[in-house]
Image (cartoon, rainbow, N blue to C red; front, side, top):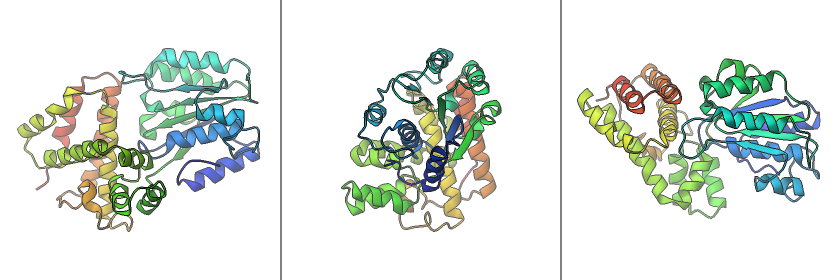
Length: 324
């Protein structure tokens, strides 16, 4: 059983590809943070390694249990190290050493790189060599916040699946299944912007909900402030920049959801819009909103390239449209 909530079309394709031995050697799941990329990557890993049910992990065999614990000898996981803003070249070098070995316990090896958009440029170059000459019995799975943040040389060698936010009703239903009360589930589903992972975490940690609400309020305040005031508003963000990528993810998704609300999409134009500030009237055109999303991606790229975080945030704040 796949544990991913939603994204059924992607799941069905992957299952068929495994059954027909037609899965590519490199898969990329691109989409917002907490939308299900990590869960889907591990589901796919278990489906590839499961010894009981081909293409449908049982979670009971030794292979599936090893994947669930992230302690499988044929699974190599690369993720952002604590306190860092990018994935180092040495981490990719360790991955290359692992994929050069024959599978130890399963029929193949699987390597997973989470947040591959955070790879250092030299790490991306090194990974490219592995993608150009993939070793036998190896599958590489990557996740990224956006394809726009990935080098084209890597993208062209991956089978890309773009994951979008889940429907509000699906998020609410899953929360209720997990025991969250109907009112809380409805609020969190609206506030989640389609991010199932965030909704589950927020249902267990009210502080997380408050943190994101404050970041959205800060965004709206910045839109309504003059240039000098904008610098003062974003200054507190510089006290802790360790999770700056999360800020970029949240603001980017807020603007995408803003566009859907303005377009009157049924799942977004609801009574729960106040949950993330979408009940606020902003005199901002769709073209300006799209431009902001691009600016956020640019700021993220600057930070990834080790440009001063203050400069990146101040430049972003100054280029936000003015809202009355």
